[in-house]
Length: 295
Image 1 (spheres, one colour):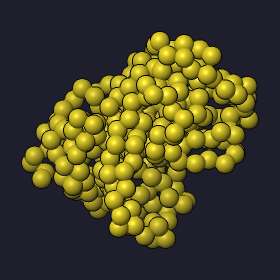
Image 2: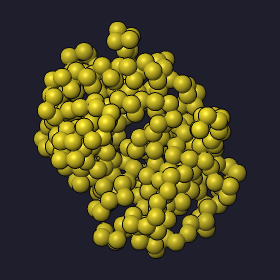
Image 3: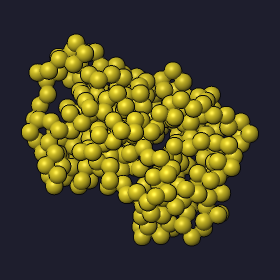
């Protein structure tokens, strides 16, 4: 039993190995989130989240958790939202990770991945960033995503816009373009689609916005359809269930140019990196850009 921010939490199975090749236990994983809490919490605050839980480690059975479980502590903040499923209205009670005790609670649930919404509960219909998700398909990889991310950077800079890149933790790259939270999801999706189509036309051998998975082979999928209410993306600094324990790492454009590899950023070295470089994704929270001219 530990006390975090005045609340008692029972931490369980701390010696259970989560990443076998790296001998990273559940206790190590919880400790990782405690160390990086000051950096990750601002990106989670007031956002409904979805967890991917791995109670038996990265090679065990995993499942998504949208609804807050019945056994969750009473102090855990939640947000209810109605969605349509199979033609019926369905209420989902999402967890909010606004403080350290909530983050530790989530980590103790073996929530190896945390996926927040693009909008906050105060402006739930208005995302505060546009996401460009560069997702390599079969016969492509991180290098192709890196090439296209740098191309996207040039496009954005030509239009006077700032984008902030992060590795997905796997083979992809995500570029966030922070905006004022007054645009609808439909509007930010249209904005993302416009720039994705320009990239696709500029690099037709490397990029595609093709919806059919079979027709994407050999190209990087430019997924502007991530900009939908209720869709989520891996949080910055969240680990991935892959050998090596890589994390979704914010990087500088200069690092992308120099030829980084996503496996360079892991649970083991991210706390030290954060002490050195700080939160490279801080601009996503601070910048409020105007995209009226593209709508």
